[in-house]
Image (cartoon, rainbow, N blue to C red; front, side):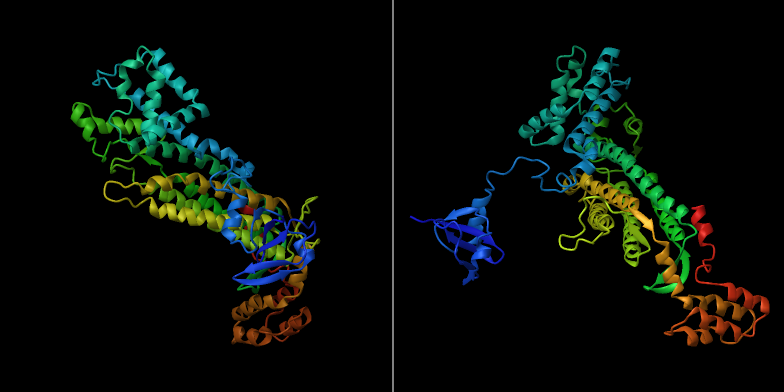
Length: 525
């Protein structure tokens, strides 16, 4: 008895009899219309599921291919996010900063340091100063914290359904057998709301992550600065509105980006990352009621700043995230400038100003063997677009929380790693693109040789200096829409009533030498 095999084709589903090694012309069911597929095409189709009838609907055939109930083990091949899949090797170093494990580790750091801080408050008799042994034990918990400990915290969370409470239970479990620390178990998380721990954990995450981000930004800026210095004296035709304009140098155009990026890089570095430790609604209610003699605001400020975080004295349950919005806006502006750079490099490559070094074995097109595409700048541009949209959303969302707090910030904060990983991925793509570049001076010379009309600007300025009437209008009539050559430009110069010295300067001027201070500006960046 024959059976049918359903196949997924570009037009819908096809089916053939399993009795035939090479299928005959197949029927395709597309929107209720039966079509026929030639045998040669049908033979190339891949069997993916058995079905008893021709024309089985698409969802059923697909569900028999991969069962959602089974799922797939997480690997770089099966990851939903390309950051953990295709691009994993490029950004995996960020896992120690932005992963779920890293967030848990930062929370543990905050909880342990808070317990140590409580032991230093003289008025808090129930938590006497710790001995060196107790302090070493607690610091050892931090130093030895590993992925297995993170998994243990997640096991507690499966019961509590609360990620920060799980940290408290984990730490109680770790110190309950220590003779000194076992007496202060209930002072773990004392006076804290979850957001006291979370906001400082994310602050530590951002401080650490910013260091790596700044390092990558510096690499990009340094690479562009090298282009500026190396090609400071290479003249090129500028283009405004895509049309020929007064010449510059390749180095000067690189210097523009270098200077702009450095300004934004410094803005990223200067943002003050703030934190709070003020309890359920930011007023130290529980602290003051339990120990009214303690100056809790001073304690909180001392603790927060001891972590390297700036203190925010006015908060609700949450630190309001204004500093994160400020940071991400600066990162987004840096990304805007880098996207501008990527697009310009793409255009200069298209014009032939830059050649790209050929990478052995690399394929530019599946059908056009000659292609050497600017893929690194394109990849950077694409990922920057994603990063900027996320940075914009996080920046606007995180500043908004209903009354004393809602939970919308929590799920958004978990995406910080994704966003900054996209930034790093983009920066690295741009760096790879830069490292493949070679200036083609022959191409820049050809462009300049073909555009003598750009000298209309200096000629009319000399005419203004020496009182010739309507200089702009005369040059406009001579050059606009006309084919201007070296010879015709020289002939025009000879008609002008100018001092001989001025004429001689104009005779010697060429599109190659009319670059102003471009070379100097490029060299000084």
